[in-house]
Image (cartoon, rainbow, N blue to C red; front, side, top):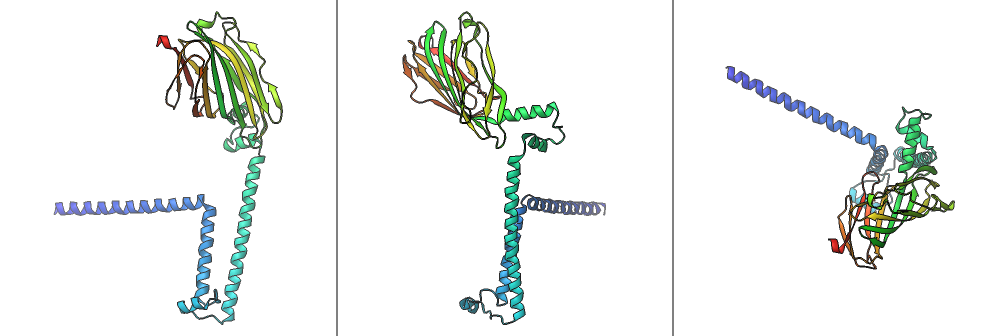
Length: 345
């Protein structure tokens, strides 16, 4: 008797668990359905309106009102054309109301859509930031910090091309002339960029610190349709035994594209790796080498998230095809270049 009682209790417990599980699944499905309707309000209204229109057409057809000019259809379905003025008037009024509300609904949605897009474009940057961070006072330093960082991220590079010309080799020291051309884009719709967030720096290796100068900045200019050509940083020699560093402003109107051109020459130690990181998020980064020295070289290029490349170059030879890297992030990705002389490999 005790064993049967326990089995009965176990069966009842299993039944309760199944009922609870079924109830839980039903509530989950119900909540998922409600969430989908809430997130797709326009689509839901469209589906309901379409369903109502089909039902109106079906009932009107069944009562001999709609599509009465198609006798073949009526004969196939066995429907007689209605002669009741009340029924005809009812369905005519229902159809008129249906199309009226469909037209009004479409116009209301269109006006709301255009208005929301226009308001989003006309909002000031601080207003947009305050929408995402409502607890931040617009007058505080924290808001200014966020505005600066968003501006910095809103200037991207569509294309960067870096051409490196090896001009001479002195023992383990190599002299290169570098030209970097960057197509900058302000992705803001309604905010001009006048921020001091660009930064150019070059650090000398220990072996080249005795070179005077160890490098020189020749060109640093920004060309834009709105301002023309502007010298961003003045040409100058790199300081002896010290790193060269200069911050610069980016002046771009809303959705404007500018061309930043940098040309410099520098001595580097071939025993050290040359590391470079783009200042902006870069959609496409192109790299090209030209060997104008008297030495045969092998150049190794490493980039985060891309395959390593080994490029052999004879004296006075250039690459047939440049390297292309995609989606380079300034904080996470870097390009590492190694120069190897043929007789030291």
